[in-house]
Image (cartoon, rainbow, N blue to C red):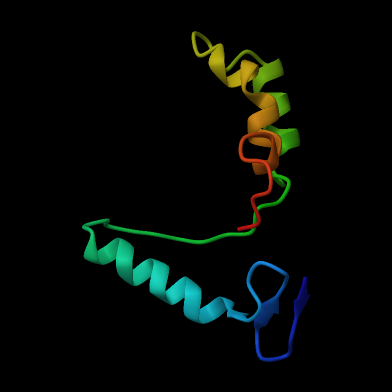
Length: 86
């Protein structure tokens, strides 16, 4: 995949995608469907994972054991949705 100076990405599946335009269309459609808010972010490693680990180690999750069980899912979206990008 390549990104041009105009903000367009190109790969085999999507020859020329203007990211800003696509994001605007997604947000507009979500609002049209009745969502109160919508956002798009990169699909990358969580930058707060160390804080989550410390929080879990302190036992603050109390009866919410699923938080520790799903740690890998919180680490990176790829662990939940292989191939995701944003």
